[in-house]
Length: 144
Image (cartoon, rainbow, N blue to C red; front, side, top):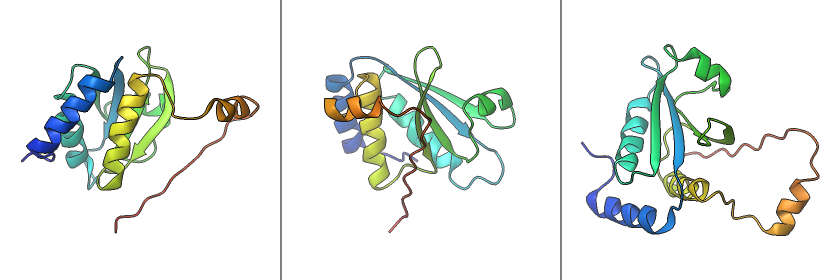
């Protein structure tokens, strides 16, 4: 059964067509055991990838792709990892199922990464260049 209804698919297809300049490369990490939302998350991503040829989706099982799991430091499942065309990590992650408000954020990230933009002001970008060490920003969302 489809996770995204046809009306929403058409809206998203149009957004992708009109707004995506480049491609977005997604590595989806799942687990066949003990992962409540892996299957549903994979279905959502496959439905999104079917809406445009500008999404490159790779499905990776954690037990069969241990090198990739290590490379991208994935420690929770399901995990959506955005990478550049050459496989370089963008640092953008979604853990868990991207439903509710997270779904629109996922769509926005797919478009922004395809366009190599962040939505940050130039002054913010300039300030971030002054950071001299790695920083992890985590956003936690709970279903309501």
